[in-house]
Length: 120
Image 1 (cartoon, helix red, strand yellow):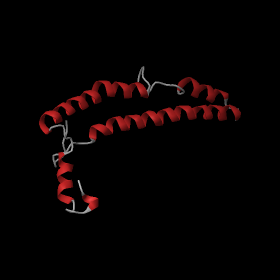
Image 2: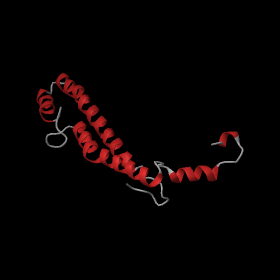
Image 3: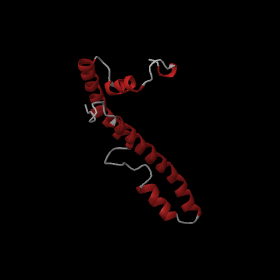
């Protein structure tokens, strides 16, 4: 569990999966765009280069034995889900299940009493 200096929960753990999903999406898009590159190389008469891209890059593992979706799954299974489960248990035990105590205090301090758009 991580907390920033103000004592509220850090959103950094959430950024991990989001960034990995971004890499997964970009890598998948790039791989599918290679189909066009191969076609254009062939149309331009560059068969050897088209075969090279097909053989060496198209569908390639990003790390040995794994595509990006498998990295995302492994991260979620071995790090993110356990992190979230432990964080949830600690918040339930120490903060009555309220995960945004700092923000709740801010809300109380910053509201205008009696204002209809600032009511609880």
